[in-house]
Length: 578
Image 1: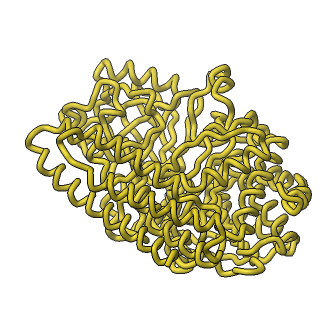
Image 2: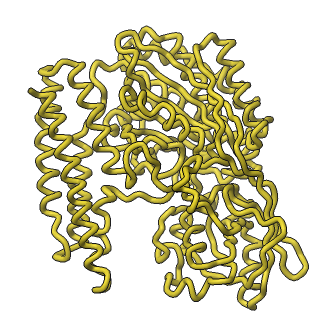
Image 3: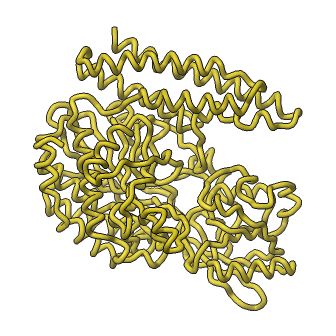
């Protein structure tokens, strides 16, 4: 760490961030008016600290769960409806059918039904049509769409513990466009807790019918988006985008008051030390994360697409830092090209070498299709052995605390010491990104990941499909990147030339690895495998003969897409080196 970096980090304090955590611990932030009150609290603090900011107030489409129940044997079982599920205040009645879940995949947003159900997915339509599906898990979008396509009247998911978790169940990312509306869920979805779920399994075995009821508030709501702009001294147009959501379920301390507090302190510290920044830092607080399926960040990606396209150098998400017992960095979200950068930061601040998870199609990662190198979302989490010792199941936030998305996500979920460590990590990572003469993306690591993915897909496809062209193109990209990065490291390229190429490479290589839809569109909210245009290779060898030709056709087209993208990336490199 340089003396300048040490000086900046020495100004970090818990006074402002912990004060916001305490304030948010008493403020519900899921009803639209209450969400705006949360924004007003952030805005008031930015004004008091004299931090330059803008407040946008778009109308975004929200679906706010109100109440739900399952009626069986004359009793009413408490439930929660995920946002975007179909409201049925008058009730829907049907026979209850239980399909046991593959418990290893409870948090998996896969569309592969065979991975979701322990007993397989054969004849789903025959088993579910006109009935209500009961299974373990969370009301996620992939499971909802599978149940709907099979003709189920509704879906009841049994959460793993004593609490019921709020969530969302649509595959639509952000406010729907006209083409998306057909994917809006057309069935009611309810979540129940584990004890009540076990009782319902018994009723399903007896062939009983149940009635599900749910109420949701849906419509267009004006929601506030505070955005801080801290201009860099040398290249103010280019910026690092740091972002996280301030709406939450209930008071949502670990998800995401601690993230909001981290961004507030980051804004204060970097504004006070803005002379250290070559390029700018933009910090945004999103509404519509929980009840709009990332509608706030998607609105921003849509509205400022050209500015992001031309000038944004990275997306840094801040969700659930600073939580109780979250002292490990073995599940740190990061794209390959950013791992060297993030590793050095976590090693210096936390004394740990992080392990990685691939960025998911989740959180407020609404910028994959534009092509932003991305790191963080979840950063710190509790160690696996501690989670096992406590008997906790896996959740997607709160540092691994199962208070996630429940009424128990209160002040005790935050930890001052962990929060301070995470603020220091975010500050150093963003400071280095904004201050470095040459941007810290290493696309050689991305090419290595591509090569590993292509090799894995070829091994699965065997002789059924030939990915030699993709393999060779990946090798040529790796060779070009070796020459490019060698020139950068030797000082043979002007920083402006190198940085322009590094940004342009992201616009090509990130969508290739993280998006199925065109640039500036939004992919559905389920798993996107690495190099998705080549991913059918993983299943082609096992397909029946009547589907083989279709799979080959898709892979031919996908390989062409991949080859064209890599050729474009090589042209960017050659232009920079010429």
